[in-house]
Length: 277
Image (cartoon, rainbow, N blue to C red; front, side):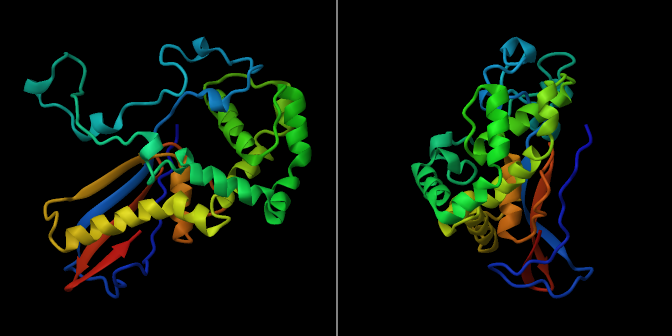
């Protein structure tokens, strides 16, 4: 599969100072990387019960929602004396994992405040206008799946179900041709806009992650973590969209493919710290 690397070449006015010159003395100090995971199987959120490929046996031997395990293996391959199984170029690596119900930076959807704020917006006049334009599409999908499709979020998940099945060379039902990839793709990108429709939703979508990036960068500058070189976040396509949207760098029609990434770099140039995205 072709991998689109989302590297946005831009100078960013941020919490530090603007980089005003490029010189031979430029030094990369710290990198924050947010990347979308690799190829995956659909999970139950992506599938409707009458889907011809609903059964988990279609995704054997790994099962629902499982994805490629390549990042840490590529980053920390074992030396010959540490290779514990001949032919397996992998070794156990420690990493930090936050359970989704406690993860404010990457998984806002487990937060009750997210549901409350999103529901309030969808019930508002603006929210109704936002979703009513797809009413006929919702009705058509409902009739053909047997599901009660009433909002953008349901279609967002279903779009990726069809996309993954297509990537697996499964033949999609004939009826999907009327809605997939379009307008389901439009609905999916509209979901990214929905995530930023109010101040509170913006904060939960990307604000907490940006706050952590700022604090970690400040700690590197003030010497709290002098040896730290990189922070790496394995995330989803909506996280890529959220971070770029908070910087006003997102193409509203784009969906980040597997392996897409953002680099937020701290540079030290001629005695001045600055940020590149």
